[in-house]
Image (cartoon, rainbow, N blue to C red):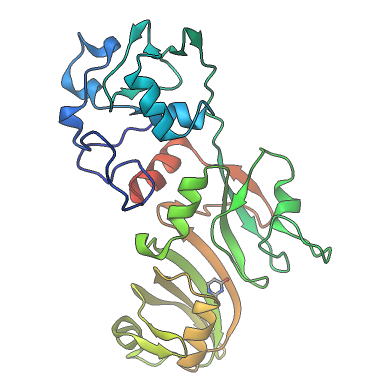
Length: 284
Ligand code: URA
């Protein structure tokens, strides 16, 4: 269930088309019939009715708004004619022209510990091994969130929640990712400062959020890099630029989700808390 607070980014896709016909301000949303006796905290929960209707395939959101206005939609037996009501798609009885809608939330998100050598694609016409082969038919409509290079291992999120995938991968949300890189060469003392200040690459500057040397041994180091960039080969290019070519790269976290103790090649479904934290991060 969506538990977005009114002060968070609204749960509409990022468009600038405005003209929604009602206020984004939850304080102005009509009270749900089930909540009429409930306190203010409960009134604020749920997803917008027209969004739930649209996702269930009733019609586009705009047409669903018209249907609400025409008194064709009821929630828990009460006809709703005002826009902006919040509903719980899994608990509320929503009916269109008197016929109850079957609503299931079948959105799922998985963490995959991608092995090196596997390409980030759901299928491949050249028969190379893909992450799609690894997730198989766990759920329909799965997509990968962003990409890891073929040689990079580690955390890749896979979901059938299109809006979540889109926002997590979109640069404007600046989702932080953490990488462990094995590099050759010695790490200069002032490198963390230089990397935080920003390094110029062919396609523009990049700055890290943090840089730490985890281990150094026999001319090799393991470094941790945190950055909120999604450009191609960004970690490898950045470290090569400062004289530290990467021999092994592993992504260990994406936003609040981390690999934990997942074995290479394993898949786990994210917990409700993890999905909630990801959604909150991107305003869903
Ligand atoms: N940066 C890289 O260089 N490669 C990846 O796979 C991810 C980030």
